[in-house]
Length: 358
Image (cartoon, rainbow, N blue to C red; front, side):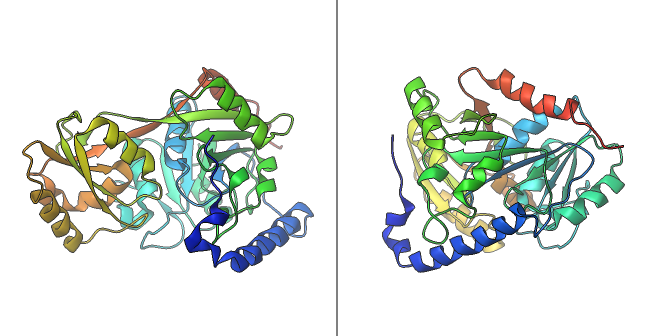
């Protein structure tokens, strides 16, 4: 297996003293919660928290979408996110007129894909949940997106994600590494999902990873991989197929584009990349740069490709992009080793068996 020690990254090694201080701060904070000095609030309905111990790139959005698809036809569901990088503050419920600037790119993506599911944002989940329940009183379960480390709300089911090529067990604390929570916090999760695995992950590597994580009795470790769907046009929604004769301009601002670049290496003739920061808000100057870069590609068989997360921040330029081959690549999670049924059983069983207090 490919071990990755962020502690040894040359650019970040100088920040090691700050990471020790950061680790101390989060240890004190978690200890205060564990000892009841700071309390968590429970709500009288099933709450599923999807989170991780590291910053960005573990595949939270595809996993939230996986859960929504799994549950939306059986329960009155709601999704609550922070709404990172939006231009508003406080609680907001997604509406038909909402944009990524109003609620954030990931919540906007959820809202566009699942318009019948309540999607809300709020920095303080403990405040936002009552407001969400006021707006949608028939809600039967809430999915908390990226809230594991906050602890102000006590979820009934915690789903912790860790990337196969950067397991939390091998990581170090910010800013030297990527950990934003203690390694021991994995013990608070009912389910651990190892994400972005190779599709052909062997049984041996699976067992080795489980031994490294060392789950507690009652914890279950699942494994998932990324699957890319059929690219569709940002404006017209017409579909295309990426072929090995095609040249691709990849436009993306996501935390971890490595799997996407590997996909293009395997499926296109060549690709060029315009990289932006995670959650980047595209400007008209960026659009001009994208078009100029695309026009500089000599091949006639060429397209522009972006992610669904980026697309919600680019759709405001749909008039300018309507005449260009500007495509969006959908992504979804797939659970490996034939355990999708077991995962569904654990998640739906949690909701069905949730005992409300009188």
